[in-house]
Image 1 (cartoon, helix red, strand yellow):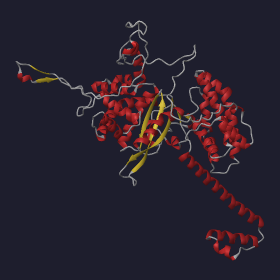
Image 2 (image 1 turned 180 degrees about the vertical axis):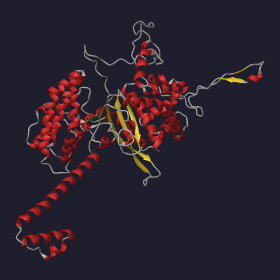
Image 3 (image 1 turned 90 degrees about the horizontal axis):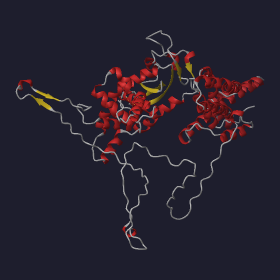
Image 4 (image 1 turned 135 degrees about the vertical axis):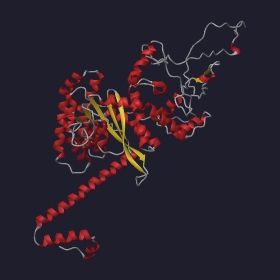
Length: 554
């Protein structure tokens, strides 16, 4: 069998070679070999097309789709309906569907009605904080209503009907004129003049601790770039250039660096630490593109969080920080954990395999990606994960101890994990390589031992969610200020994320903490009392001071 002449001429060179090979096999009567060759080529084309389609769908979802990994029960049931299978027992249950919003009425927009009174026996609105300052405003009755309409006599005040209004007073700048006393002996001029030391926190600058704290809090807590802060200050009538704010911000972070260093020591001294990293664009004149990709590492332990900047993704940078670490480390499938060695060369692995913990969130995310890509089989894994996380939520709601939580996991969670991995191992053998579901099952198999280790101790979480939440501030800031100006600047970013991330973990007011700590450090704070300035200790001192009626946490 030969192709028509016009078809032969239209074939590209590579396909013409394939045609000649097929003709040779057919002419030699090697039909089985011909069939195998054709099937092999078709399988290659199918696998490549499936992989490219999945990558395109994933790219479109990343660009236009939802970023949340939450999958409702209804979504799971739709996927199972597509599979033609029933949901596992752990995924049973239903959630109330959202009703369609009412259509807007025609005409002018009405004024909103007063909210109804809460039913008797139910809690009403929460009281306003007692520590806020209060001003009293007396509202008199109108002059036309002050006389009795029956007898014409003046009405007398019998009391007031009191209500509360929560108002916001914008921040304001204030100039503090520092006058340092000078003393001299009128009888002994040769003794010179004695001048009081300045209480300024910055010798060659004019910012007070409150302003320095405001600059770095707005940058790290509100992700506000310095140029936008300069615009904000201009509305108050104060002209400060972004470069000036940058110098003041760098100074404030250098002041807080010893606190961040101490937080790192506390975190890495814990027996259980969770770790993750994210990228950071850093300007680099030596890089061909003028900008390189650095990395910000986050470590959570001892109820604090520490951030480390690394100029690249090599394992030696987190290894330098983890040299003295001897506990359990929880993270994703980063291959560099096995390359982190103690000492210079040839030392032992800092975190051996038996002390590494996996992350259920990372495993689940890959199945969620496959499900959103249209592979309904991934719904089976998502249903199992839903059951596992229901058990974890119940443990936290009941505030179980570590021992009780481990017992609950042994009884309820591990059987579900066993079923999940039995399904994964059976399915993996039938999947087409490079597809999203194949990648998900392969990752799950690679992480099985590390993730199962999380269920062996009630102190361990089954995912890395806490560090994932703490690292979001870096992603938010990255979207606003786009890049760090240098490696040194990125190291200062790590200092800021360390101190304010730890403040957030303990519910500490970052502005009050930073203003207080910057002032104390610059006034000369004893090194042996540095732990008192850490956010957890500062929060406890603040509560004690508030209970005693003192506003100074020291």
